[in-house]
Amino acid sequence: MLPDVARAWEHLQRVAQELFTRYGYEPVYTPLFEHTEVFSRGIGEATDIVSKEMYTFEDKGGRSITLRPEGTASVVRSALEHNLTANGAQAKLYYAGPMFRYERPQKGRMRQFWQIGIEVLGAAEPTADAEVIAVLWGYFEALGLPRESMRLLLNSMGDDACRPAYRDGIAAFIRAHSADLCDECDRRAATNPLRAFDCKNPACREVMAGAPLLRDELCEACASHYAAVKTHLDALGIPYVEDSSLVRGLDYYTRTVFEIQVEAGLGSQNAIGGGGRYDRLMEAYGGPATPGLGFALGFERTLLALEAAGVGIPAPPRAEVYVARVDDTVTAEVFGLAQRLREAGIAAELDHQARSLKSQFKQADRLGARFVVIVGPDELAAGEVTLRDMGTKEETRVALGIAVDAVIAALG
Ligand code: AMP
Image (cartoon, rainbow, N blue to C red; front, side, top):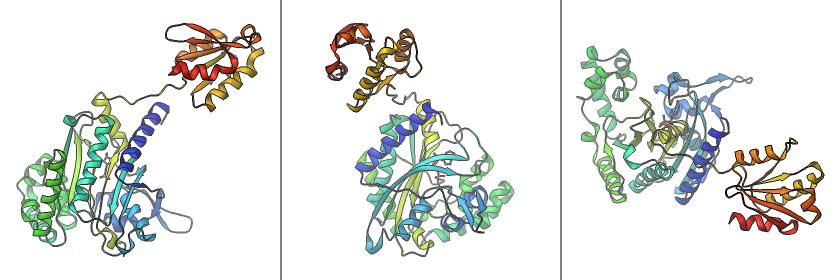
């Protein structure tokens, strides 16, 4: 990532830090690789991620190691390891960093990509679901993505009380329609039947459109949780579309799942962020029952979506002021003045390549400097320097001793 892209990256991270902090989330950093088991146990053996997409290798000690394909498993693993949710405590965490999946690369789909995400551990209330969704929605809005370009999909995946029977029902449905489904979906009947809803094959989509909906078969507790999440979203004025085919790729989800898609710029990889509730995940690691939920969003896709919506990334000037030297007899004063400006909090630049005065001006322009301080032997003899406004081309003489204050005043 060269500076233009890296700058956008940092902007995305800054906006996230500011927003997430306002909602009470704290940063967490997890390792880029973990024991393979952390992912296979948490995400689920039958998922696409674990069965086909992980970068897994053996280290010199004979351990099976995997480059992290997502953030949630590691965050929950570390929360358990360090007792963050002991005695009913709640933890609200956010992370950002590269993830690795061996997928077929295409626009918006890379094998190393960046995610930023949040997790709430220890919170079962539907307000937590609505908060997490509000943070995701609010993040894209804070970046400047217009509301109309986003679509928030919402679904409930039920829990252990209602999903198993539904799962079996879908498996039976798949077997009954196997002649019209692709081989992969046919295979899913045995491994992960709900994933058949996610198949991109048009024939499969048509068949699955006729399948029973989990939304209609939720147990009472899940139905009322789901209803409350919708009520809270309505109260926040966040528009959503209920989509019962939204099942998401990971085994650990229970109840609320959601995804934000964009209309333009991404083709088939149009999901910019998503997440859900995973009330059984901590138990999968041998911990106590601890409700949890979160989201992850992709940096690359977010940037593509912003680009498609015509939203720019603010690019601060690389220098506000350029300190130019007329000849090399004043080098020490130029270097000293640039340093004092920087210490005063001003982005200042100077020439390190023995350029002519003319090419120093050009350089100042390229860097976006609003002012150039010209230091020459004659002015210096009088204890002064020249302050040139690059916009108006106006020049004023100021005493060297107050040059820093003069620049601050000129910059406003
Ligand atoms: P997931 O962890 O699969 O729910 O993905 C969450 C978000 O991460 C997606 O909405 C995408 O924005 C992003 N993402 C997932 N996989 C990739 C990938 N291979 N390349 C780029 N972005 C991805």
